[in-house]
Image (cartoon, rainbow, N blue to C red; front, side, top):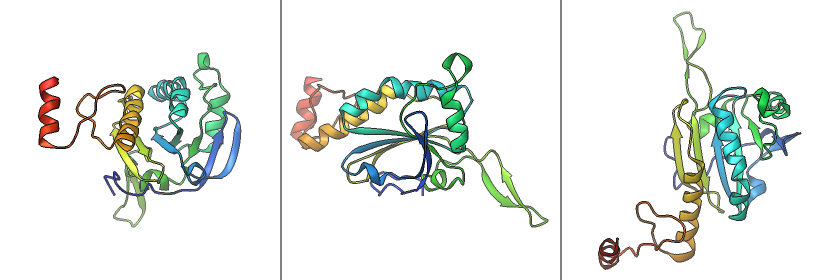
Length: 209
């Protein structure tokens, strides 16, 4: 599937842990109709880069919520693994205090539909199915608008942590464009002028900057 920008975000129904403690069945994105969703994938529970990202998103969670954005995380771990990690204190390698949903993509289909699944399945000469590499998620991030359309995506390799401030900037840029009908130029940030998409508008912007 590759690039999802401009397309309907793939739907799913899966188990998840919400509010840091409660395991729920049939978690979907449909419950967030009318809101933006920041959906991000991470490789594994009980690892090293992943908790830095999960806590970084938690630290900015109110800023996302103030922009009408729901943050949702996904990995290929089980809901029980998510729950156990959430009960463990930060000082002991846990992520206690993370409150946004952690979705369990145990059958790998969500990661496959968003095209962020590392590794691959194949058949050997004996007709047996084999896995090439670990079947875990790359660090994919998808910004989905209120109509369920993907407006931004980025995928990092496993060792490369993401910038949460950049994710917030992209939310601001999307909402600015929606509200003002203008484009956002390079290095745009909230509070700056947009760009009128005419030759004159571009010339004026470049002259001023």
